[in-house]
Image 1: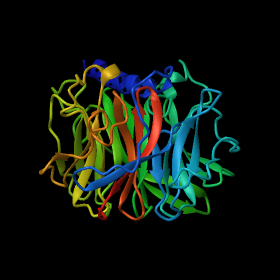
Image 2 (image 1 turned 30 degrees about the vertical axis):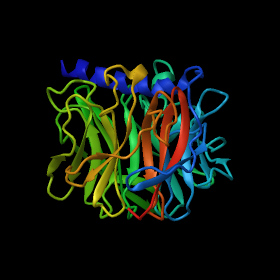
Image 3 (image 1 turned 90 degrees about the vertical axis):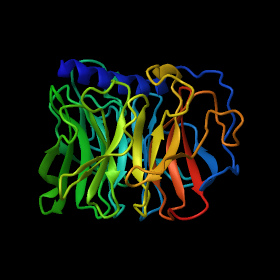
Image 4 (image 1 turned 135 degrees about the vertical axis):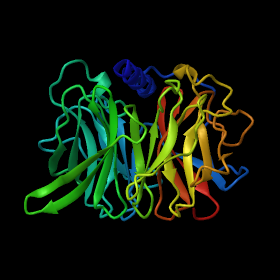
Length: 361
């Protein structure tokens, strides 16, 4: 029963990820511009209309992101915060499998990027191995110029690996991975660079919400907590919720607890005082129907209180309107703490936009 439940959850994330691979629809949409709207956010701008999962380097002020190429496979690119100076990092990296590569996370030094990479050979098709789905993905470390690569994790066949994230001090890496056929774990490892080369050591597995789906999103600024998405026991399959795990005490906190909504992709603000996350709440849609799912950014205090809506991306009366069906995905803060880059599905098309705030967060 639990195995079937996890397979269904994985299928839900697969459907949402594969929505970006479909044909372009004639959507009623408009480019994001420097619009003014209510709340702490002050404007939104689109910086790329062919980019996906991302991470913003705090030391280099570069955004790493994945993009599907003409060959059908994703690779990792970098660009400036205005979308200029785009360069492919992994297109010709020696030793790196020449299949799907994506879901990048910067080491704080800016010297390395950890990526998910599809195994060179495996059962099944590459569709389920795309970066947003993660079946048969391993973790690799590449230099920021793509000249060198090292395999960090060789995942067992037909397991899922998702969303690697470095700690702010660079000493740890977290990611979500299926560890049995009964669920996945929040994995945390020490990141080491020594005479043996870059590697992971002392891998620890946590299943804070039980034998179910866990997807990691990042660390608190002091690196004491991991923020993640999971589905609690007895919860409907489509109603993901946001949790935190205290690595020092083992304490788990449920921040959303909405058993009728889709809550995911959460990030602490740089001050750690608040959390920004994606939610289907008040979308006027059925979160069980992925094809017409609409989500927006919401903000809350770090303990889950004081929740309020930040954007109305699918509301044609709002200045930040982008299209009839907009879904928010991966996100990352800028070094200035006043900008948040985010992956958007505008219909089936992947965009990268930056939400601006009037004050540092």
